[in-house]
Every structure is written in C-alpha cells, then in structure tokens.
Length: 249
Image (cartoon, rainbow, N blue to C red; front, top):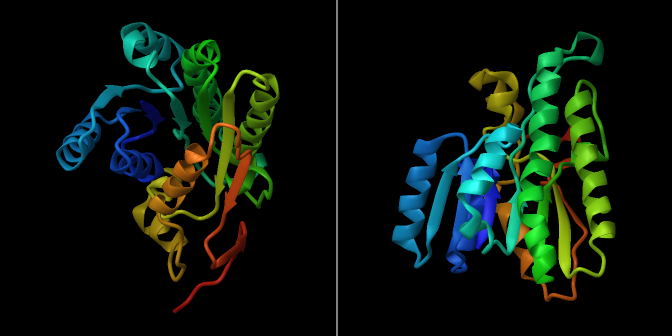
C-alpha cells in the first residue's frame, strides 16, 4: 500500500493515479476531504484497487499522532511513503518576510515530513523493506531572489533525505528525493493568493505536468530492491535554472 501526503491535487493526485494504474492500493491524506472523496471514487471505479482517505494537516503534530493511532492496521501495510505535502507562501525579500508565513512553510515542508515519516519508518525497518520518497525542489540547490525561506525548507528536505539514507543503510529501506523544477499545479495559486499572478508564472512556458513528476516517483519506486535512486532532478526543457526560463509568445 502506498501512503501519499498532499494527495488532493497536483503532484500528489498524479502520484495516486499512476500508482492506481499499476494496481497499488492507496492511503491518501490531505486537508480537503471533498477532493479526496472524488479522487477515491474515480480511482476505485477505473482501477481494481482499494483507496483509503483521511483528512490530515501534516503540520499538526497532534493530528498526525491521532491519525497514526486510528490507522495502525493500514500503516502496517505501507510499503511506500510519498512525502509530497508542501507549499510556498509569499515572494518577499528576506527583510520584508512575514514570520507567520515562515512558520507555515517550516511546519509543513519540514516538520510535516518528519511527523509522517516517523509513523511508518519504524514499521519499515522492522520488516527490512520499504521506500520513502521525499518531494524536494530545484530550489533546494539553486536558490533565487525572494525564494529565501521556501528554498531553505527544501534544502532541509535534501539534508534529511541524505541523512535518512545514511541512517537506514543496512535496513533494506530505500530513500529517494525527487526535485522538480517548474510544474503547473496550484503551487503558485497558494503562493500568491492571486490566480492571475499565478497564471502569469506559467505564461508561454511548456512547464512540467504533475504526471511527469509522478512517473519519476513511480520509476524510482519500481527499481529492484538492490537499487536506490538517491535523487532525481527534473526540469522542463524550457527551464535551465530558477528564473532562467524561455517564454514563447
């Protein structure tokens, strides 16, 4: 069974679709229950898989703990965890940044990843198998103006990915970071809180689709047990680095 966080849209939803097509049962968590219900109905109708859903804010430690207690039997079945939940808020210079935005990004992108991983990792270690996939970003390695705290959270994800891989050496548990560039999702809608500004980010650019990233996740997970893809960096062809983008009229 595959556990995917932030599964109600974008890359998380695409991962659910790709794994369902491969016949994998799913445990999908996110904050928006109506979207989860629609995804569950669609995937169960189209594929012979079981889809379990739960409302969960990964940044809420108490909520994650309660989720763990309530779903022990499902968590025992998890073979792959896709830590996809994450966001960026604002695009301010560091001197103009809002501490409340920083808190949301750190709590979701870093602490949330840790909280959920902590639920399933001891079970994987006990079984001597499993796979943790952490959704990173090109911003973890190549920062850009006004990307400060978001980039810092994703650099933390990269450090955690490397640390997990080292700590888990010899356990049979694999760890992978997927680091995409520009992907056309609701990411910019959340960041700007303005659909027109968000739309302008992708104007004239053939950006990655969520499925492009989901297929990379599935590729890493599908490798033989002796193969661990540590990191995959994925750019759209029209992007060479953060802020270095070819726009076509």
